[in-house]
Length: 417
Image (cartoon, rainbow, N blue to C red; front, side, top):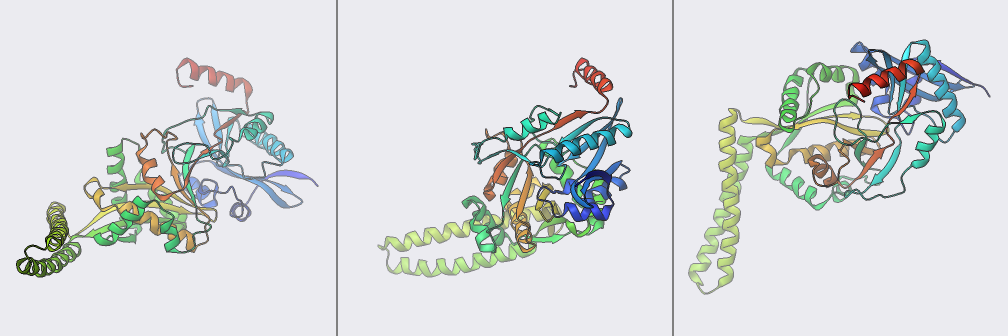
């Protein structure tokens, strides 16, 4: 049997990628189309054995003053246990990059180095075997990174298996008690979810930008979200969580009226049996409940006056669906409405959609990799009871050795290494 390296047609690549366990949106044909629309150089390459594709990758490019960098983000897609195939693909990609004048190659495989619980404790031994295998293939492993980034796929992420959670009840019961509590609150608040049209993307951008400004990170531009919408089609879901103040206030007032009726009956019993302490306790409990609803009405009335509208966007998010996983990509929450816990409802809804589509994994995506309490994003994601995953990271393969050494020397001299 003979292996040969070739560029693949979009149809060939898509058929292969959607069936690969290591597939992800960053290696999808939709991502390729997105890159091409944004005038980015990108290539679809693969290895065939007797006309059957056995390895493939979407290569994206980044420019430096010394030449282009070829990036396989969450790629390549192949059987890494097949060392001969890894070696062949490595040499073939290197030759391909050299023909196009590239400086060096980065592989960022969709392979786990370490899985941990919510406290950062290892669930299994680290995958040092993979690092050694890549070293044997000629790659240099870049130091592991920590922290959040919106400029590339994360080194650390939080994931949840959906394989055995085939009903909404089973799914919800798999969450922590906090998440279950917040979902009950969502029902009381009457939060409604809806998908966005393309014309509403500027409003989505305002939400994500406001959140980025508050949390001090860089948001994507509107053109990026529009390109996602145009290229990913039904695979991309832009969703808003909204609150209708008038309906919410009316429901709360209805509850107040019902509690007033109960309080009136209990007061009658207190007047008739003044020595019965249980009636006084009942009165106090129901009165406390009433005051909570009164406070909600007061707060919502004030918020509606400030907003100048009866319906407001509370939170929103963008998701990408793949056969392998549902990925939670970008989101935002308006600070004034954080007490309505809308992000929990959004996540629950999208997990139910993933289960309905037979998607086995829900990817909450990036976390910092720090478990000391400094990562607020991690605190939210762990409420859904998954596990943390550290990927194997970046593997660098020089293409033009002399220029690459000069490039590295310059970066070290300028402090950018």
